[in-house]
Amino acid sequence: MSETRTFYSSLLDPKCIVASNPELQIALEEIASGQTSFGPFEEWTAWLHAVLARLPGLVGTGRVDLIYENCVTAIVGRYPSGRVDAPYAEFFDDVLTTLGVDFVREALWPAGSSAARAFDVSAEWESRVEPGGEFSAAMYLTAKYSTDDGLPIWWQSVIAVDTPSWRAHVLLWMAAASELVTRPGAQPAQLSHTRTLFRDSLWQGSMWLKGTYPDVNGTPRSHPFLSEMRQKTFVEVFRASLDTETLLHWLTEIEAAATPGSDEALILQSELYDALEHCIAAYGLRRR
Image 1 (spheres, rainbow, N blue to C red):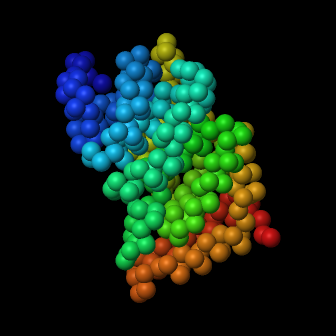
Image 2: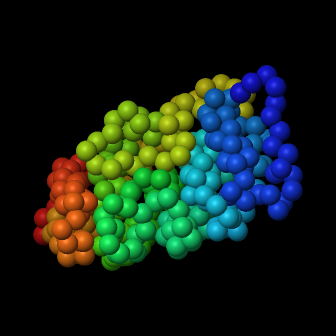
Image 3: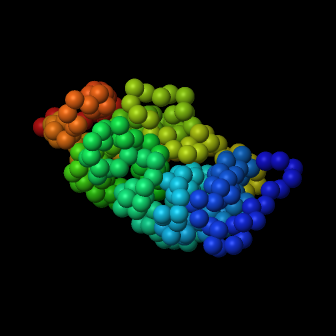
């Protein structure tokens, strides 16, 4: 942040608040990164809430996936302690209902983003399987802000989607996310430096989420990305809903939908089997 304030004057015109306006992307990046360095400013919070309300209406106006990812980063930077300090009681429920995984699956992907299409099994679909980006941002958003009772219900809805490419996303995300889900104190920023063999689970701005955030008085406070209790609950949900045989069945269906003779398909299949072995070890998944 420089000594001279930058004003994004085009955003004063409601007609210019579209995903294709570079000033919107820059302003959100400033908010997302600024909060992690300087704490919450009232004007940043107001602007974030305003953009969250407008997000569904931005679909089809440009790279909404990047706007979405920066919004998720900004939410975590503004509310690092989870569902505490919400502006009103139902705030996080409203955010997850409007902008959770279903929003990504039903609005962003069909509208066209840079990420893979979970329901696209056209030729060479395997090259477009990417569990990072807006997919990962939505998954972590729910993982962090869902209620304890809501978490298993949400996860059941995720694994109930039975298209092969969607399940490839889910399995790779589970493997890449294991550090945040199982290691106490792990932060999204650390994922930038610990890329695994699997396609990563990073998203726009996740490198700014280091776990220390200034409060309203500027005093740095440490917050876990996922509390140890939430990590334990998440692992329990994984174990209760998935076992080795189920995931092997997923892999069989993914292989059956693969593009014949595709190098990308062979690479993806290899990564998925590695991801399966990793998930079994990381989460202690059971056999029937």
